[in-house]
Length: 350
Image 1 (tube, rainbow, N blue to C red):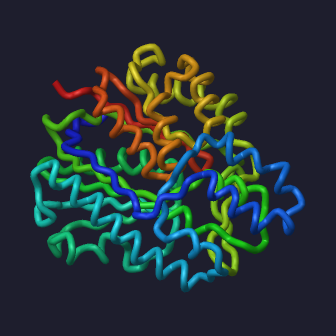
Image 2 (cartoon, one colour):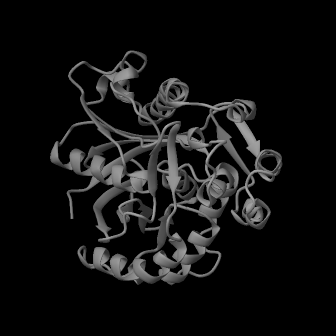
Image 3 (cartoon, rainbow, N blue to C red):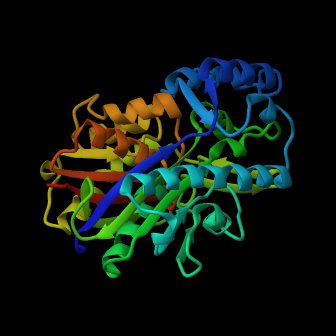
């Protein structure tokens, strides 16, 4: 347990270009049906993924040309900073704060390389102080929303009075490629979108919820389940093992252990707020955690409207849940490369 930390605000941001799933499927068929013999067998994933639309940082035509590391990185540096500024500004506005009042900045992003990191590139636009502590975190993938929120909460608890800004930014669409296509690339094309989310935290009371605990579990010998591969043209997605069966078989014992550490059981949690990795992942989560089928409605809605945006996605779900009215006790949960389950326990503000 940690000293209660107030979640003062939460904001989301999406890039300007919206893609309809039916259009993405048609483009993928036009590009790959003749070059990838298994395409038609895999094409139903565009229907079963649970995605209707998603937002990306470039118009669809940009993705239809071969792109290398320099071009992808150039777009990442421009668009990720824009999304960072958008989400962070909204979160600070909601908290009634300015960039100059931020003491610690935690930035989570795993879909591009930025050195200097994103928060450094955004300092001038955000008005951050030169002495603000910067903590960029890479490699968390889809677990980054929960893990980053937990890290920000621990830093706020350890530094009473400090304003901690947490920002998650992912541009999954930049991994789209036209050559060396794999089954994982087809699934990623049907599933992933771009987005950002930000929270402002400070030790003490206030805000819409208190963060009271953060914990994670990583399973040994699971490096092949999810991650990035480094290709000559950019980052390529790894799905070497199916995630839903693994989650179904392994998540419940891990969740029981993480909750037990804070004196809770599954039945004490009023709402799990989950990262929606895909429809089958959502169904596996409902079954594993004994949640009624179809109860993860916010998760399905976010997936349908935005796709899987990796780290920010769980925060999009949390934003929907808080606008609908958070119950007394909720747990933000996400699965990501490692293979890791990450959780953050929230208490509704009085």
